[in-house]
Length: 413
Ligand SMILES: *Cc1c(COP(=O)(O)O)cnc(C)c1O
Image 1: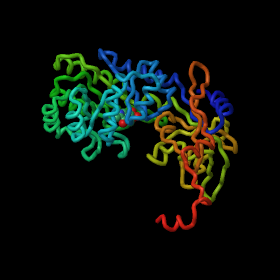
Image 2: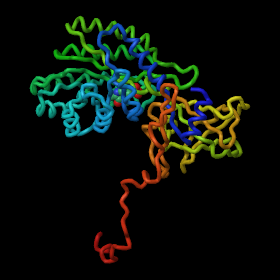
Image 3: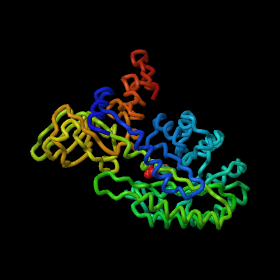
Image 4: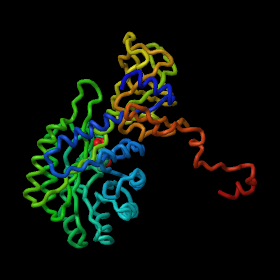
């Protein structure tokens, strides 16, 4: 989006604000479906947790996408957005049997990644078909926090436990209709991914009633110039041909499923914040903005890089700045960044702010979470209002200490 357009949005909707470009979401979606066009039935389930605004979900619905959910609340959000239960897959980790049963009751596809839960669920509900999440034990991912396929990961059922899994299926007479893996974020090497897919195919052979194989996600997108990104087109070609061959051997046309979050929404998003002050210390020039890790935590939490641009002074002389927030802790967005000269009141633009940015925002320091705007069909649409003071107090219960007698206070220990 152009600087002028972003400036106008910041002016109209205030700062800080998240802005999403629907066109980019649509083109990423089409890029993915196009890469797998030789597969007969492809299902993309957008991972809601990346960016869970209901208008974004509705946009995905218009594209023909399903959704991947990790909590009962995300399931409810999806249903509220108009998705049919069969367009929703529930892929939680570490939730109770009760929550899984609740989701099953709503009619969504259940995905289980724990043998103890599988056994209990299969015993009680043998007629509900279940997908199983496998851990293929492949190390992939750009960051140890988000590599979820390795041996010590809490995610998935180990491939070494397949014999036990098969016994549970036999004893409970339950149906396994899907097989799934999600090896983590930031796949850099397609061969690693294909290697994991071979393991998934080998496992799939042992189940006779499959409808789909779900390869999860973890597609890497570029965060800065020169960054490696997952070559979706090459992956599409290679995996499609393996998948089609598998279906032939299996004797049934299965659905190939994916559930990307980051790939679909990361680049669509920008975060706009205003410079409150420029502070020169002995060694550093800080640009201090009206935000912090309460709004965008990825740089502090994962060490993620987000490009930062001064859209108020795009042709100004470049200088080095450390961009920080207003939270009363260290909250550095970027260290020693070369940015066009910054003055008080300038608007800084953070790139790749679509995925895991607003959805991880909080009220820390009792600040409001920002507004969200969707640029769709050449127009800005407000899709979330900025919070107000009522939101800060909402659900808090005030105790009237003047009405509690001193005696009660003493005896209430
Ligand atoms: C978070 C998550 C995804 C999305 O991962 P991205 O790296 O954003 O594409 C997919 N599947 C599951 C099960 C997840 O938990």
